[in-house]
Length: 279
Image (cartoon, rainbow, N blue to C red):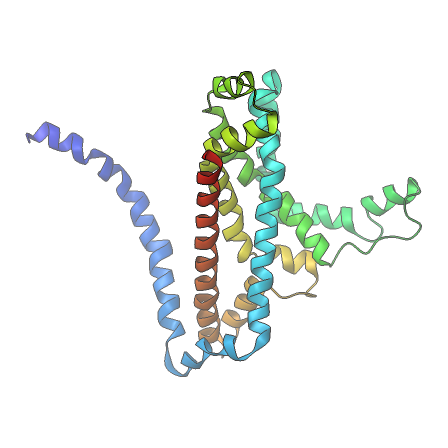
């Protein structure tokens, strides 16, 4: 291989080196430090603590359920929205995409403050419902699991819409038209054609929501009012403690392993679903 061909062959690798170094410096090395800290000194017992105290297991299960709920709800809402943007929006497509991305231009704390104003006992939501006569007393929405779920879906929804939009935009419309012309119902077309062909986008969007939702810290703290503990809250309190940093690192490793196992199971289930739909 001459020098010119060799340089062209290795060029993509050299362009990828900065991102690879960024990952090593700011992800893999800190992750290795967390694992080492979890085994340091007398904190080795912390690996057995989550299995000795039921509350730590319940917190992991609660965080997994919250992440699963958020991923499923965001996917269910995002799929028809992305379909509408690709096939029905026409001239409004760019404007609607801009409105979906627009919230990312503002501070995340500003979003939380706005939702606190909406969901407060004397906030916008209760005032509208009372004005319509639908309720006679203000609802207790803020500082509850309901408020956490609402804020999670609101914040993470664009992370599912955008991958689904990119997948649907590459889809051949003729495949849908052919399925309908051959006598399939709309639901059969969705189940046998649309979902299998867009499963990569469904998986990408779901895991873009599911994984960060598991360790979410800010939303449960501000919207939940400390009524329910989640993995992010426990890890932050243990790691920031003067004597509990090792236990926090150990709990991070244990909860991450639980997340990896559940994520692998969900990925396998989605892959089987795609195969069965094609059959």
